[in-house]
Length: 327
Image (cartoon, rainbow, N blue to C red):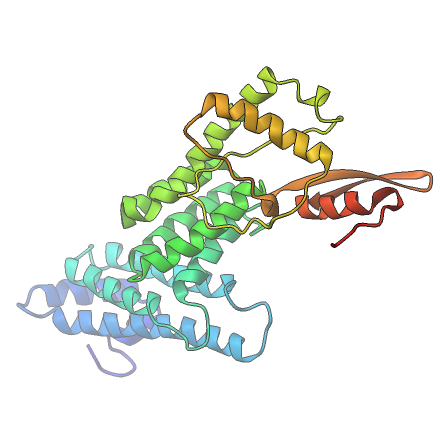
């Protein structure tokens, strides 16, 4: 079993699955005969996972600025090893519990092994999820995305520091949702359901609340548009609001800024309407998260510029040759 050149590790390295199957059947007939095979399998798997980690370390040492939280190559390699040898356990070793335990031990070791001075594996896994779920991320088919997400959720189950993953994932999910960069709302819900099965409701409860906020927010925006003629009171500004529950979302800083009269009118109209709907709830506008389309005229040409709310405030203050006071 341990003989160099022909033992269990050599058979695994060369994908000699039929020979491994015969070895498994032979050793399983002897009491305690599988222990040496299981130990060889576990040691081999730990070695394969360590190879993935060593290659990540080499990329980091090469001073590649793209490597950090985002290292899809590392996660893809790790998932490839997981998928391949999970299949070996199922087909070659008949799903035997000892080999399933060995697979578990190897990937718990890999998922929780940290490289000093770099982001934790939990954060890197979350970043790969983000690249799968946001517009402009990984260029994959829908079936490939689903396959990767299923495997990632299994890799997530091996993490000891699930809270680190959850914090990173919640921040990235918030950016996708607020910036409308999510590939699919249904895919977001599906992924959270899978994470909930593996990590429990405590991992996903806030993120599920974020998705619920958007659904409720759509209804609020539609009701506001129907009940208030915003254009007649806001000097032709098209104004929409996303109402979020503070406890679900990451903490955002909202700087104290002076809104233009037009923007202030929009805010006051919405506050008056919302207070009649939800008298017990207090609104706090987070201008740092807003965005605007500003129409600017330079000479004879007109341009529509996509800017943040804070940038729009600055542009408005400087428009028409005004000189703002900082007193």
